[in-house]
Length: 534
Ligand code: SAH
Ligand code: SF4
Ligand code: F3S
Image 1 (cartoon, rainbow, N blue to C red):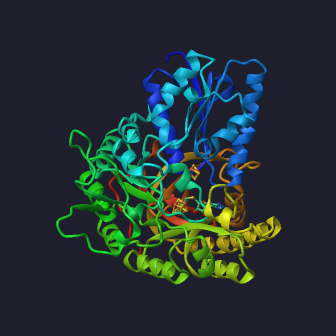
Image 2: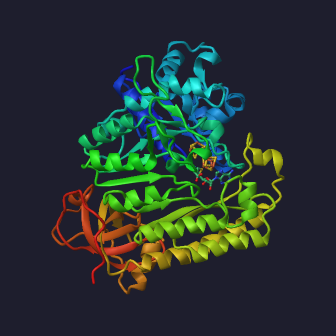
C-alpha cells in the first residue's frame, strides 16, 4: 500500500519492541512508509502493554488524543496492537468506538490484511477489523504451535536495520513466545498465550542473518529463557520441517533427558549460537527465571567468552510466604543459592531483577525480607513495581488488594533507596578495571539540562569539575550491562565510536553509571571482558 504513512508507538517490554520491529518490516515490504510524527500519519498504531494499570493509562491518554482528531474529521486509521488489545479488546472498543483495528500479539501476522480491510471499506465490520478474540491463548495450544503463523512473521523479518527501524549493531531474537508459569499477579500468560519454543535452527539462522546485516550484539528474548527446551522430532510441519512446539512442564527441568530423545536445552542453544555465529561479539538473554537455572547454563557462559555475564533474574519478593502466594515456585533461600552459584562460576557476572511491593497481605516483616535481599545481594539494579491488580489474573480473584497506595508508594521509595546504595557499591567495585564497552550513542551535556540525567551532573560536580555547555560524551554498556560514560578522545570524531566495542579504563562511579577513559583506538569484535589490571 504505497503512499501510506504509518506512525507506530511502542509501550511495554522488549517483546513488544521486537513485535513492533517485525510489524514495521512487514508493512515496509508492502510499501508503507513510517514517520516519527503522529500528525503526519494516515495510520496510527499503538503497540500496547497490559502488565500494570499504569501501562494501560498511558495508552488511554494517547488514544484519546488521536480519537479527538478522528472525531474532528481527520482521515486517520487508528489501531491498537499488543497485549491491551488481547486482554480487553471489547471494552477498548466500547470506550473508543473510533478504533479501526485491534490486533492481539498472537495475530500480528494478520495486521496487513486488517489494515487493508479497514482502508478498503469504512464500513468494514468489527469482526473484519479485529483479530484478537481467541488468539492462540490457551485454547488449542498444541494445534496452534504446529500451525504457527507467527513463526512465519519472525522468519520473514526485515534484516536491513533501516527497514526494521532498529539499531544497526544491536538486535533481538525471540526464542520462546508466551508463558506457562502463571505467577498469580501476571497477565502475560493470558495476553501472550501458551509457551511456545522456536526450533533452534530457525533461531540460529536468524542470528546469522542479523550478524550478516551488521549486528554485533544479539539479545535472546523469552519470558523465562532458561526454560527453553526443544525436543527434536516432536513438532514438524506437514512437509517435515521442524516447527515451533509447546514448552514442557517444570518436571522436565528436574530430570535427565530421556534416552533416545534429542533435546536442545538453553545451554545447548547458547553454545550453538556462540560457536556457529562468531560475528556476534555479545550474546545476551532476558528474562531468566530464578528456578531451574541449570549449572549447565552457567558453565556454558563461563566457557563461551562472547556470552555476556549478565543475568536479569527477577526475585519479586524476599518473603517466602509472598513468593508462595505469587506462585513463583522458589524460596528466598533458593534464589540466594542460585545467585551464589552464578557468582561462584562467573565471578564477574552482574545480577539484576524486579521486585513487586505491596502484594496482597504483604506485612512489614515480608517487606523487610525484600529490603534485606536488596541490601545483601549484589544487585546491579532492580526495577521496583507497586502491585497492580490485573483483571483475569488469579491474584485479583483470590486476594483483596489490601495494601493502600500510600503504603505501596512508601515501600517503593524505601526499596529504591536501598537499591541505589547497593547499585553504588556494585558500580564502585569496578573502578580501576579496564572493560570492553559497546558504545551506543553520543550524548551532549548541557549545564541546565544534562541529557545523561541528573546523577551524572551531581557526580561531575562532586568530582570538582564543572560541566561545560555542549560537552560531548559517549555512552555505552559493558558486557555485564553496566552503563558507562566516556569522554571522546581529543581530536576524535565521537560518532565514529558508536556501534563499536572499545576498552575503557573505569575511573569514577555513581549509583547509575560508571565513567571512564578510552584506553585504545577501536578494537574489532569479537572481544571479551578484559581482566582487571593488577
Ligand atoms: N517473565 C518475567 C517478567 C515479565 S513482566 C519474569 O517472570 O521475571 C515484568 C515485570 O513486571 C515482572 O517481573 C514483575 O516484577 C512486574 N509485574 C508483572 N505483573 C505485575 C503486576 N500485576 N503488578 C506489578 N508488577 C507486575
Ligand atoms: Fe508473568 Fe511469571 Fe510468566 Fe514472568 S514468569 S511472564 S511474571 S507469569
Ligand atoms: Fe506488557 Fe505484554 Fe510485555 S503485558 S510486559 S507488553 S508481554
